[in-house]
Picture 1 (tube, protein in one colour):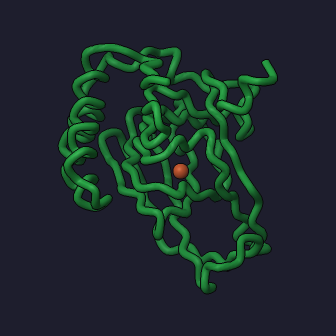
Picture 2 (cartoon, helix red, strand yellow):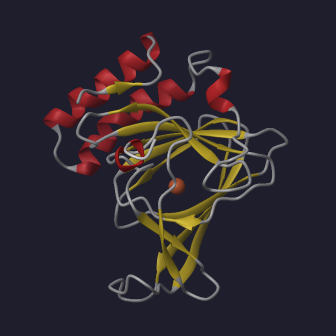
Length: 207
Ligand SMILES: [Fe+2]
């Protein structure tokens, strides 16, 4: 296997190259995130490197409502994935976790993010008592950090155009099994978002 450059251009090479250099020297997630922040901020403010095709919602997305994630780059060992999440106007993701550290930033449109924390002891895989802890409004250029201990949220698009947010995560977050939550009844379900444009390893065998 080798790294997958689904989108390959100069901006991508500079950004991912910087991220991979940082990952080699910073084992601590918070130190890595801190070092990546300026490169991520610059990327969010750079026009014209993300083709329109990766900013389009998808009718048959696994997350429903046209919501989906376009994979742009994936490390060969699945330790890093960079993608674009598209959320049509008025659509909202389920409440979900990421099980990874990362950075998420808005590239186009506007979003509201609801951040949840667990008020239980966090050990039950089938039930979680969630409390809304924060509501963030995001406009292009805004970004936030995710850490495994603080990574439960949902996002919705509040603009008249499809929002596009860039996700840099320290796992293959389209293919791993993670969790979706119902904050009303506390239920927790296994959740895999998939990628709109690339199969996961165990999907390739059936195609
Ligand atoms: Fe998310």
